Image (cartoon, rainbow, N blue to C red; front, side, top):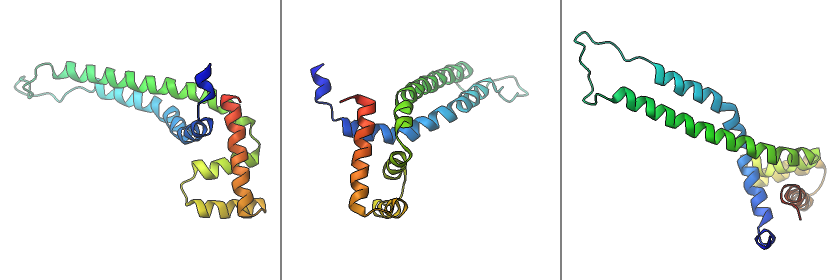
Length: 150
């Protein structure tokens, strides 16, 4: 396919690295969110002594149920997408050596300032700052090849 040749694979790889933590969170939190939403749907309304609904909408219970079903559908769809992402991304990530994973994690999965991250990596790897950047580019290129090919 001709379009594949023009894909900015490095930018796509950085995007995948940025999405990695989000997908991990989705996979870990979604089952509990679905249970919580289902429980909210099943909670009975407080009973009233006069037997009259307090809401002007006589279909409020049905609306609540439909809203809950819609929310569960969205949660399940996000979960499926996250699992598919991890099936694609995780084997490539696991193929990287420990140093490559550490460098990419520091650059793209950490929240610190880049200058501090580079300094920290420089000390851990016993190399100067310029070599940290070179190794980052090399690790990023390696991951790009693993994810998207040449």
